[in-house]
Image 1: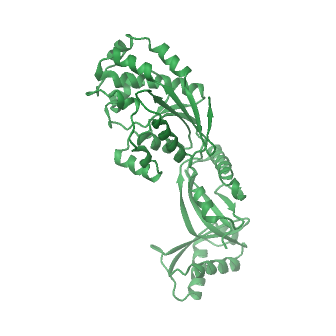
Image 2: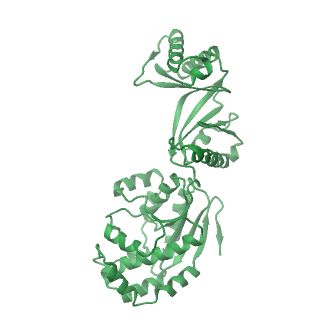
Image 3: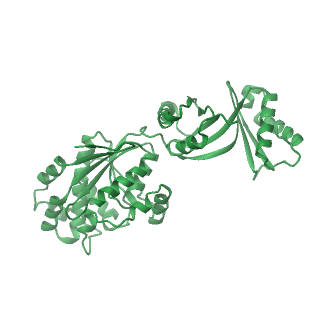
Amino acid sequence: MNNYLMIHYGELSTKGNNRKEFIRCLNVNVKRALKKYEVETKPTRDHIYVYLHKKNIDEVISTLQEISGIQKISLVEKCALDLVSIKEKALEMILDEGISSFKVDAHKAKEFLNLSDYELDCLLGDYILKNVKLSKVDLHNPEGKLKVMLNQEGAYLSLHNYPGLGGYPLGMNGKVTLLLSGGIDSPVAAFSLIRRGIKVECLHFASPPYTSMAVIDKLKDLLKKLNEYQSDIKLQIVPFTKLQEEIYKNVSEPYCITIMRRMMVRIGVKVAESNNCLALATGESIGQVASQTLESVKVINEVTNFPILRPLATLDKLSIIDISKKINTFDISIRPYEDCCTIFKPKKPKTKPRLDECLKFEEKFDYDSLIKDAINNIETIYISDKAKKDD
């Protein structure tokens, strides 16, 4: 019976104090995620061991696969740290699986058995071949790869591995405010940030009565999917109608999207700073639409020195769609809806806006008071296992 899981760390190049913090943070996240299963965890320099007590193995593995910072999960069996016990356990596992070809991959044999890893590979391989007539060694494409990890507490043998998300443990790399539209891109951006160990808070710009409450329901559904990777996501909704109407009264139509994005960044930065976030983030992909050309990005960035992350900057649309399908947000994202960008979309948006022109347009109306009013009327919603609303 498999009683252990071995968690392999993502980002293996992480060293020193960063590695210690990586392990500490990941272990906290694993324990929190597996709390209902009453498992025990033991972090070491190279792995986290999870003692299962023979409970809900498949459910535990599925839960671990949604935690960033894990490269892979191995289902392992433990035996005593002596050659006889290791041989017997290896043979037992091969027989139980009924595999016809195998490869042995041992680690740290020299340290604990006074054998090289290669010598232990050969000894175990020979022993299995002598006792399993129909089995053979295949170093290049084996049906089963028997991994043998040794440490001071025993030998851990595995035949089954399950892929993890990789990346960094959630929370290790700070917190950002993400501009969430409800389309395909921004939920994928959220997932990409979470995978890098960054906690995500979301900011949405709503323009009632031009946009409906159905958009908010859609956002909630998207964030419930993202809850699988980060629990307790904060969603803040900015009333953007007054500001948007003033933009379209005072700004030449081709520049409206650029000015609107500049206002969004101004608001986003103020919200991010008030929430102690280290950066603003967007779902922009370079060149995908008029406001995402490099010329547009440069002009939009001019409103702040605050960091702006664009995790999807170099991805094409098909790659973004593929990820959205994998994280189960695609079908929600393509629900028909109108957001503040599509409602007021100009026929011919400027793809190479000039900063001096933007400044001239912004002098025509008092955007500072409108920004202040919008921020003062933000609504906050928490998306979690038990959704709660903060009025």
